[in-house]
Amino acid sequence: MLRGFDPLVDAAVRPYDTEAAGTRDAELARTIAELKLVKDEWEIAQLRGAIEATVRGFEDVARVLPADRGVSERLVEGVFNLRARHDGNGVGYSSIVGAGAHGTILHWIRNHGTTVPGELLLMDMGVEGPHLYTADVTRTVPVSGTFTPLQRQVYDIVYASQQAGIDSIKPGVGFKDVHRACMRVLAEGLHALGVLPVSVDEAMDKESTLYRRWSLHGFGHMLGTDVHDCAKARKEKYREGELDEGYVLTVEPGLYFQPEDDLVPAELRGIGIRIEDDVLVTPEGAVVLSTGLPRRADEVEAWLAAQREAGPRLP
Ligand code: GLY
Ligand code: MN
Image (tube, rainbow, N blue to C red; front, side, top):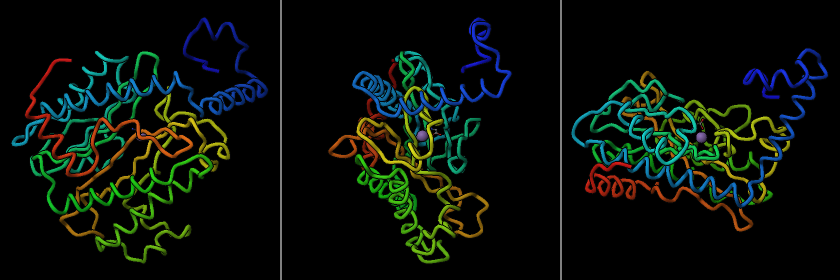
């Protein structure tokens, strides 16, 4: 199944030269993906460990992020990478470090920008632990230490959306229902900001989904040994299926106003905000595994101040 990685393995299995072999490979990939949906206790402990290391990595970054001058996105990437290599196997995926308008670009991994006091910094980073389980966490912080009123307004919409998604999670709930819970709050927030040219109901209509101009992506994905775990599961088992006890997934809504977006007021352009946490599905609902990093706006400000006060540290 994993052909092309190791010549010894390739030599030991039948060549991928018939439709039947291709079908068997696909069947195996699908079966494994679906078996991975439910995490057992050991796996959950691995994920918790990776998340704890990720929390330390975000703290390391906050401790070297100046409030009053710019630093390169690569400093952030490098500091987090040190923690990932030291406490874990490495990063679970290329770190996304988006200063200012770079935060509006999904999967911004060039990281050649510079932070600007007064602007936001979006960091999507995760440590992969020794057994390859990875965290996947995003925080968007105000470089100066304090959100402007407008940044805070957008942040609070994304926060409310994420909370609605988390609150909706429990066994038996459709993956798509979590998506709709998050997206409705984003659409309501966009309406409150005055940028939605239609009503919330019209924007949420399947034929329209106008809000997607600013939300860009789904609410989240399964998490495990792959950052986008279980991706080969059948849609009826995953994206069109229901959540079950033991699933671990991300909840990561965002709002993104591109710098050249003529449909929004100038002051919103270049603002990109995502909040991402990792949650475990239990009979009682979602348990957020990444509570080691605060996510409410005022708590993020207090956390940033406390890290800066503590100062830099080696792992
Ligand atoms: N954190 C990267 C992603 O979810 O795609
Ligand atoms: Mn993610």
